[in-house]
Length: 356
Image (cartoon, rainbow, N blue to C red; front, side, top):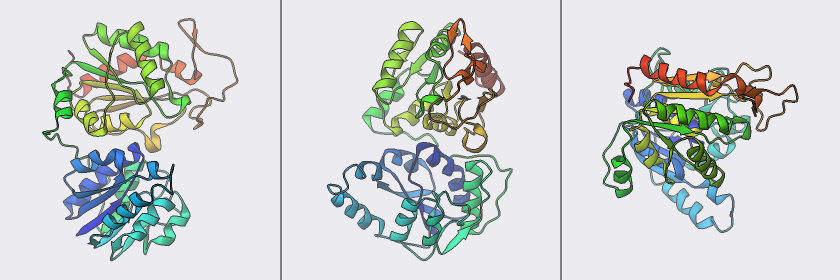
């Protein structure tokens, strides 16, 4: 069977779809995939994907009139081929409209009560009932199983399909040539202010990692994160990485020995790449959208108001301190660097990854 998958963003959502893609491939389904242009390198690496159709909605929506040419080219590319089935695995109105524009014998998505936006279900010919109170990876696997008509084995281990591939691209070669064999990657950036682990704790964690023989790597994705990385390196330890695309990030993640991070897309990608990954949760929770994988551990705060699911901290109670410094957000007072580093080393030992 030849299918079109519509799963555009965000980075974590794209990663969550990968195990379902792997299982469907084992049942004889091959895919073309509509995905945001920034994440197309992930789709290109999966063995079930023949063709990636990049969409640039995040760029287009800022200048809709000027983007008409790009949108027309995308629609033309979308309609080049007719599919046995078009699957909207996003459950949003915008993704349902993309699915409706494609040429397919059948359009399938989440049932109305289970879609993230109920209006999306109007564009499907068949809806799959997928209970919402379960992890996103499990929901994706159930959706694919219902769409393609095979039995889902709930106990089947996750296979994200991100096998290592050699690349002739010079940028990827230069990344791989860097010495990452003893590297610990600290993912300090997050999309919400309430997700950010206190900077002083990152400094201490970097010091502990360096003392244990790791080379500390500090990424960044915007100017604020670059400045934070510089401060962590100056006060603690670390080498600041250059700006990179997702394809280069996969190369890095497949080479490092350990990753510690907050709730972020890169943490999900690290888990999918098989690197030991310890993810920290304060304002959010790992139950429904947390990092998963064979070498993943999560530390979640049990602070009274956690998880608040708020972009900014709204706590107004007594303050919390660590080493005489105020902790903000205070829910992270329960996750000090000493506990985090001990947990990271335990994860490495438990998964058979040697320390430096």
